Length: 400
Image: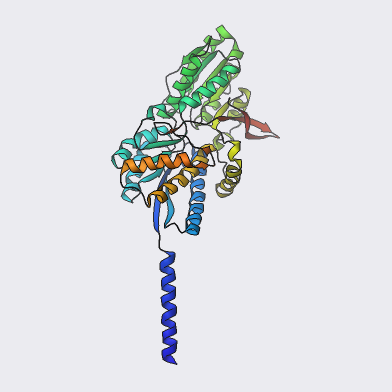
């Protein structure tokens, strides 16, 4: 009897061991992510982190159900939009065996890590970088949002269609915002009977904007003498420092006499909502800024996803954050198609482009141009409102 019990026990143990082996018969691919979680533009970084976490859970469930021998995990680095941190974390990620990277979200960071990614056969897919200076063929950098030429052209047309003929263009001194400033200038300059006043970008370390605002005020006065206040606007490409700029501008009647517009780095930011003066200035100047728009054709995908992201992190997700979700899925399909991460950089990148073209995600179809940047997309414009004493962002209109 004892021998029978022993035999049965051994068989049971062998069965359990076999089950465990079967359960673990897969390779885990860790994907690095570089987002601003606690610094400037965390309104994109925090929802992006939640988006890829949800994607990882869905991918792993899908791969397990279909018997695909891969699982995914993510390591998220908080870059705070700091280029030196981005470079450090790229090295850390590579040392940890990661060659697939989502982010960084700003063009300045992407520019800082580009040569490292190229040299080490990595694949970097940013959900927020727009600078046209980074539109380079056959490199390691891909971008899942429309570039500054598309965005700048769209908002320049919107500004012009509102009757503006004189425009002051201002930006923070980083490659992404300068790219937007230049693209808006070029697009607005090309329209009939217009004048653009270009202001030298302000330093990223600026905290007192008195000199900048006096310069803007002077340019407004010059343009208003020609076109009148109603035909003059100010375009500001910035991050959350716009709150301080608006605060300092709030008491000036000239600065408040024209409409203000912004870039994608300052939209739906929670940083402004606690500042009465900044919100009132934005409302008084009818400020709005563009957000990469989500197509109605993909609403069944992005609507539940945006709700899930809000529940997870407490912040609203825009199309840039949703793009990070799509990136994660396409990376997973690339790994599945190649039975792993291809060792050859060209094969990895070509396969990623092919999988992107075949994927219809939460941001809709993904068309990448020859430089690896998204070539399609429209924009939603968002501004500020005050309802029953509470400030919030509101949808204004869509780009054409």
